[in-house]
Length: 160
Image (cartoon, rainbow, N blue to C red):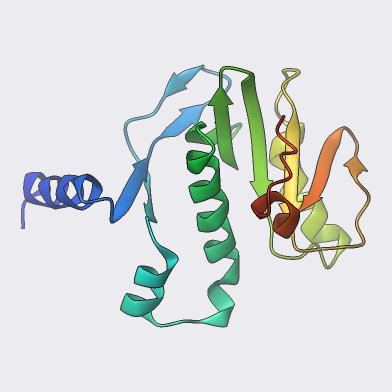
C-alpha cells in the first residue's frame, strides 16, 4: 500500500469524525511539525470496540478523553515538543496558550518528576496544568497547577 493511499484513508476517517490527526508543535522553534503526528479516536467506545477494553491502556484513554474535551471546549490543540521531550497538549484559544500534561496516577516521586520535566523545560509564562486521577496531590507543584481529571471533565476549567 502506498503512502498516498494511507494518507487518503486517514483523511477519510477524519472527515467522518472517526478520528482526529494532531500535529506536533516545536515550542522553542515556534513552528508546527509535519511529521510524527498522533491519531486520536473521536469516540472511546469505538476504540474499545475495535481493540477491546484493556485496563493497562488507561493512560492513553485518559489522554484521549482530555484531548476530546479540549476540542469540545473550543481549543486548538497540538502536541508539544520541547528539548526532545513531549508535552501532551498545547491548547490555544482567544484567551491564550496553555500547556497540559495528563497522567493516570502520580504514585511515586519519579513519576511526578517525569510528568513535570517537559513543562519545566518551557521558558515562557503561559499557564501549565497537570491533570491526574490523584486526589491527594498539592494543587501547585513549582508553578504547575495540578487538578483531578474528573473535575476537569465535569466542567472545572483550570485552563481559564
